[in-house]
Amino acid sequence: MTDFDDLLKANREFAAEFDLGGFDGKAHAGVAIVTCMDSRIDPLRMLGLAHGDAKIFRNPGGRVTTAALEALVLGVHLLNVDRILVIPHTRCAMAANTEAELRVKVGQSAGLDASWQPFHVIEDQRAALEEDVRKVRSHPLIPDSVKVGGFMYDVDTGLLTQYV
Ligand SMILES: [Zn+2]
Image 1 (tube, protein in one colour):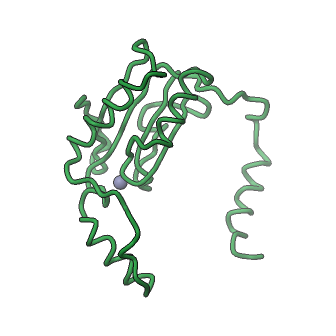
Image 2 (cartoon, protein in one colour):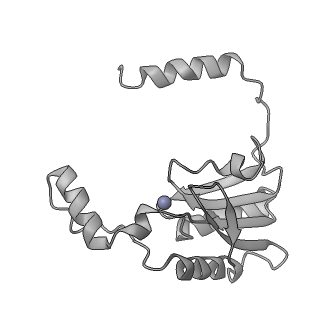
């Protein structure tokens, strides 16, 4: 078992200086974020937040899926969340490819047929963002007192712009 040695070594160093034990799992800044899995996004740092401040749900594209809604409902009722940010980003692969193109690329990488695999590409990011924010706002278990915003993160400037 050596596949993860470098990461486990880094973890030992992390744990040696670990001083965050005993912390609860609430969102101490009252913030929940739905954003993309993209490695150019550092959700806490880009909002000036720190460890323990926010609940973060990530997936390809930063979409408000059924699972994202489950997380948000839990966040609002059990984990102190009162502000929700939905944050897709510029140059997202999920918006830059068609479903067919992704299936071809993955199929070529896998050397197998990938035509059956859904990827849920995004045709229009702004329209998708509006739809996603509407899904959160209209959820029966997310009260109007919870503020919900839709933003776009620019991976080249680090700037966040609110659209919804
Ligand atoms: Zn993305």
